[in-house]
Amino acid sequence: MATYRFDEREIGEDHPDFQAMAAAAHSLHMRPLCLCKAPGLEMYVALIRGRYFLKRMPETGSQHALTCSSYEPPAGLSGLGEVLGSAIRSNYDDAGTTTLRLGFSLSRRQVAAPKNDVPRSTNSGVHQVRSDGARLSLRALLHYLWREANLHRWVPAMAGKRSWYVIRKNLLKAAEGNFVGGRRLADMLYIPESFVLEEKEAITARRLAQFKRLQHVRGTDRPLFIVIGEIKEIGEARYGKKIVFRHLPDCPMMLRSDIAERLERKFMQERELWNMFGDLHLVACGTASIGQSGIPAIEELTLMLASAQWLPLENSYEKTVLERLVAHSRRFEKCLRFNLAADKPLATVVLSDTPEPVVVFAVPPESPDDADKALADLRSECQYQVVVWNCAGSEFPDLPPAKS
Image 1 (cartoon, rainbow, N blue to C red):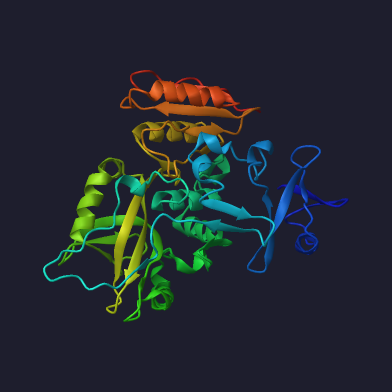
Image 2 (cartoon, rainbow, N blue to C red):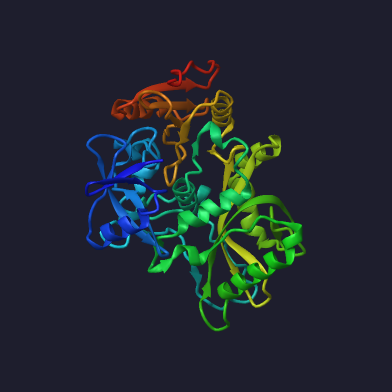
């Protein structure tokens, strides 16, 4: 548990006086200090739904101790560096909120289509990635929430404790304090509850109440909401396809045939790995609408693979890395791509149980020709020890041991 200094007093977040001390610091615009390293690192106070939280100042995560909850590797090791400060803006001088700029629409204008015209999909290419780093793609938004929920981190004590209940709870908490175009992100986010047979009617009632708030009203632009869930199956419907989410068996979401075809083509690798390895999770993040029929329909979608521990991964080589680290009880953080193009090198993990951070790169055999140079450039800019696994035939390298 982190310890903070308010003036001359040092307390932790679990102290009975913490909320009162944080409230006073917030009203006086004071900067409490995180004491993970001497002489202390400035934090700011965020007010979210009536409670106060301490957050690290922007671009200071790598200055905190490895064991501190505020530590994070330099943004340049992941895709975060491309969007931080542009698509993700922390308002630490206000209420501690964060403003997000999205690269996809949350409404659809009602325009009559010509007769015999087939609606075009709004899916804009592989992984929803655009070259404009100033806005978050669907995948980048999912990675952002996963990171804010600390679901990209692993410590051995988490073994057996990550259920969908925990995933949902942390994602909803991570969405708090984030705003899109002046609207609360949490108000436009739907994540299915964990299904419990004995509570089926109550769960359904809560879902219908939320859908009613999100439902399209005739004659206005059609509002879209963001849905995040684990896919159980993508199957045939009478017209087009349907997605069935786990924990939401009685409410499939419709998927137009053209979007389904693009999904099959763009995410072939993800679906192949998901079909091959039964312990993988396939997480979807998309926009959807609810028409007069009350049936939700997907508008855009991205997919993300996650390990048995819900750690995001891109390929079988990353799966090997994550499984090895978990099996050896290592503590680490998974680096996320956000908007970064698929042909750009990305650190796989950063070990946080060593005296100093260790960055691990897993380089797939099918990497582009200029990958070696790009990786060399990234290594030259990295201030940490680097370990590279060239996956084309070489054995997994020895890693520095965890400190005792």
